[in-house]
Image 1: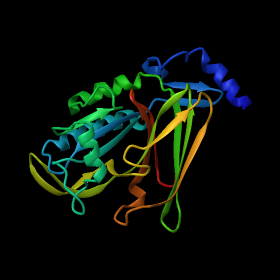
Image 2: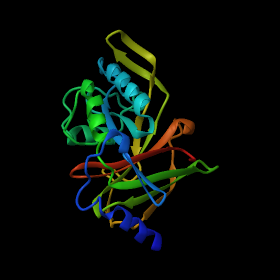
Image 3: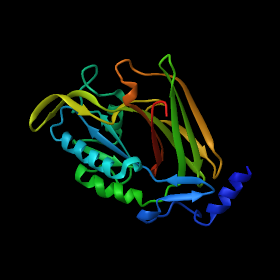
Image 4: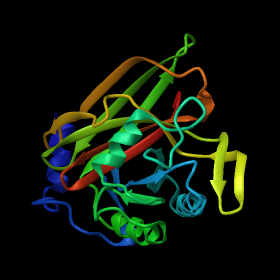
Length: 256
């Protein structure tokens, strides 16, 4: 409790209201060894039957290479351009997200669920802008894959102000070889990355109520991975969102 009081006093002067904008070289808040880092979530609504979607995949890859751990990309296959299981990469939640967010054309995306749907040429500017916004939440996620193949996930949340929202946990997979059409034709060995595989705690996550400086830890046990997935390529994505958009996001590989 003493550590939390010191932590609160140290940041109170800068946190009277909502998060403020900060410069590019001040994206980290370090208070008593606690670091709050802005991480941006890019949701790429895509499909294997979308001939222009590979261009959006390239743009997402360029941005991820530029921002590394400050950017999380999730490719959500849903709607009429996505191919259904078992041959395709569409998941039921993907269709729900496409409907809820009004996706009508592909490729399209959301950056921190702020500012509406965006064409891929505008993703870079939107990601940059979001990185300038101060983070109001420190969060981390870790996972352990047992010998029996069951997954355990632990998420830690430390708010820098009182916060209401939803915690969402997703599984994503990289390096999936599957069909993708493009302007050059169909490629059955196309490598798909950041592919949304499913929601761990429901399509829209679960409500969380967070008080300034009070850490909340949530555990999820006995999660079973699909036999077709390669655990070494699977990651856990965790984020908190509310009506203002994504507050904070984080990611880890399995067993990290």
